Image (cartoon, rainbow, N blue to C red; front, side, top):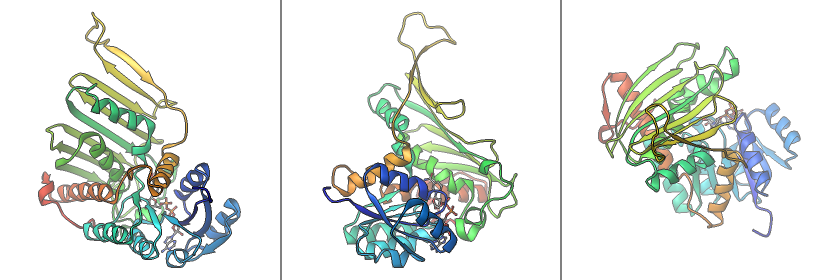
Length: 345
Ligand SMILES: NC(=O)c1ccc[n+]([C@@H]2O[C@H](COP(=O)([O-])OP(=O)(O)OC[C@H]3O[C@@H](n4cnc5c(N)ncnc54)[C@H](O)[C@@H]3O)[C@@H](O)[C@H]2O)c1
């Protein structure tokens, strides 16, 4: 790309700053931003030194200089904003979850395909160096047959007593922690373990006065026969993210809970390892954050240098698993993905 690639960011709240950092780290220029909130717009325009601002996605996508957009709006607005961007011929990096219904997600995928633009969904954990390395270890057979996958993402809104309406009100968010955090974990589950055949979920609202669940647990049965567990919560203390992969020949453990995250590879190769003391290798990963690497991957996909790291179809499968989770929790029974529901709300 000889000329600087120019992008717009739609929605300038919490997550947008990671996109901004990702674009600037990758050498792209944010030339326009949009937000319905004039104060937020003004603050970000000053902070990021962005030349133009708009009060709607529909206006921003018509900016002739903008070549691609990040959609960082509340979940309910991902669908209309993506359709508007595709109609204007702009590449789309849309935050997760892709949509609140299968039909909306399919429309977003079809619109981007017809317009010939890249659609990437912001499941940035695929771009986490430890996750990418773990996937390689699975692919090369280091773990043997994968038997159990545990995934956890949980927090407590930084100790706040209230949850923003973007997340706490059902009409804006479409769901609670199972959707908000769980869709990341469902994507990671598929990334590590392939297709999921069945889910069995329980949800609860225990810590916040919200319309949605703040604690959830989903058991997975993968098509491979492996089992999985997806844990999400806004009732943790602090910020917690991790994956634990158990195979017949080795295990991988990764958590941010105890200082600098490291990937631990536990296996048996040396003679004389004991019951409680197998071999252990630890890996540390330097460089850009997963969010920044995800934005860089989006730009590389636009340049045709690599496949889209997390496609619209991947995003939609994550939503399908979350919906199956809600269906399961509501009816207190396991749900086969063949029979899964098609609406979150
Ligand atoms: N990938 C991740 O790890 C990650 C992390 C946080 C949030 N997210 C996702 O990013 C999205 C945004 O989350 P957030 O935490 O930044 O939320 P936020 O509430 O902090 O920001 C949303 C922004 O959108 C603006 N907005 C709302 N409706 C609008 C509209 N119709 N038109 C224009 N602007 C509008 C709001 O004024 C606000 O500034 C959500 O879909 C969320 O799920 C992803």
